[in-house]
Amino acid sequence: MGENINPRLAEVMSALVRHLHGFAKEVQLTQDEWDLAIAFLTRTGQICSEERQEFILLSDTLGFSMLVDAINNRRPSGATENTVFGPFHVDGAPVRQMGDCISLDGKGDSCLFEGRVLDLHGEPIENACVDVWSDNSEGFYDVQQPDIQPKWNNRGRFVTGTDGVYRFIGIKPVSYPIPDDGPVGQMLGHLGRHPYRPAHMHFLVTAPGFKKIVTHTFVGDDPYLASDTVFGVKETLIAPFEHVRGETEWRSPFDFVMVPEERSS
Ligand code: BEZ
Ligand code: FE
Image (tube, rainbow, N blue to C red; front, side, top):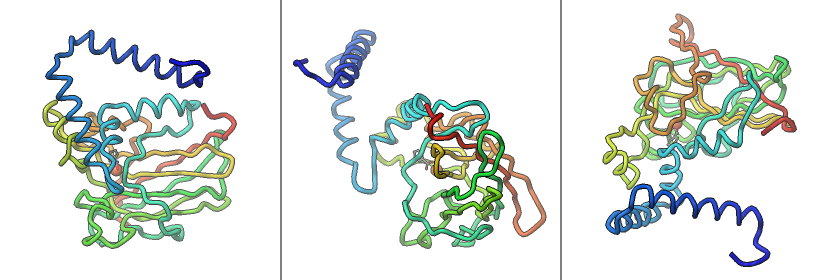
């Protein structure tokens, strides 16, 4: 490296090269394997577009996204844990009234999601924005089926009042495969791995003065819970899904606990 290199760049690149060389030495990488890796990374880049980010999918399926998230989001016990953001969030979802239904296609088992946004002392947080999104009952997000699903299907933002309460009706989420028609899908196939994610509801919770929470709640009896293809499951994020006889068929209570911005990392 030359002189006057940014010290962080020097640290990161030195470690990267050291580990890359260590990896090649450990497995005694052959020329054919090197060719194959270059071809794989080339295809991974070539399939990327405005709508598709295959490199992030690669990072997700190697457990790397969750590792980087864990390094950067150490939180005190009691605070809600993060998990992978995923590619299907859309900015600017409609702000809905508390209790509104986000499922616009009328399919799936209706489920009431409710709880409170709290600080570490259990006090409610006012003006928290709870941004939610999920797949439909067939396992697709609206953006994957723009000609089939209504725009903003299974999405919405809810802003808490003084009681910190959020409440909305969605559907009980179902498990679905990540996009597996590209190089990452081929890699999973070669490794004998399935492409499925266990059923989950996505949450992005933000509030003034607090560190944002990027997370999901998971359905506890999902068959893919122990083998999530992106390693996103955390024990504390498995939420109750109770069968109820009311306006909805299911109810899933879950509180979010936020950390003040200055206490983060
Ligand atoms: C998701 O949950 O939406 C997701 C996360 C990572 C990769 C693909 C999908
Ligand atoms: Fe998802």
